[in-house]
Length: 455
Image: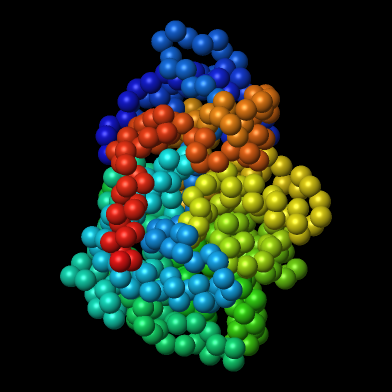
């Protein structure tokens, strides 16, 4: 990654992250040599020595839930019948073909596509640890290191959410199944072996931080969850978990333990302010109350939840629990689509409009997403914060005629990733005029990496 560049930027309109969802006019940003904002001042005339950023400037976006290798499945798994479970079998076949070199190339291109959409930080839910058949690479963290290198090449910060994955699932009787087939690549055999491997990956890179994850209550038996939660607590790591994505998961968990997944996490010490519950689609009233009491974040991935016919989460009931957003399987890579999907799904569920509001959705896409990934100093345009920004054009065909004074509303409900013009992460320009500065042919790199993997 290149060194940060000192800069003075004058934003025609900007949302700084404070107050509600309204933008401010004439916001002057000064970026220091350490890649942090040294000055943020609204209502200023344009200084002659400042670069003019037309349109709307937002804090950099946080993609809080990613499976980078799923990008290879885009356009291949979305039609026809089936369910989450049949989709999963297709995903497993793709996973079985990856090695560290192929993963580096695919993830680098996928992360570059994220940067083009305004993302400055990604949470990679990483469970593809070992070689075919579960055989360890000479470096047991070779696949994780490939992701760290890919993020550096693409200019995005990374929280490597290393996943504990011990069981092949829960059957309808509530019995845990052994890992089998491609799943053998995911498992370390025990929580202690997982913890040992996680500890061996010393992330000294300034752009990457460690995180912990339990894949789900299907993949981590109840008597192992407390150890996973304790490790996250001991090392002060964010803890992410797939929760109640499918009704079948809830039924199997009730059969096995007499409790819902959320209740099981709470009893295991795994439902705290450091926890992010991914999907949380099928929650009971008691689950919702427990989540709100805990301070846990709920990470929503509306495109995936819609594509896999998961259902509609009780988002409005969960608020004021903090929300974050993810693109998950990357059926599309567009954080604006995910943000408006949260509100539009809630409209379908409740038959009411405007349930969440622009400010809540923007915070989910920015400051709350960054905080859930262990970067509390990012996601807002405030002095001392990391100099992350995503500049969105307002003069394209999708936003033509929009009122600039309400440009945050317009962007959330009408813009796409294609409207992102410039992106800065930690004071470094990663995207200029819609082109990635380090991966200029992002489409070509994606095409080559995916065809190589699936040929």
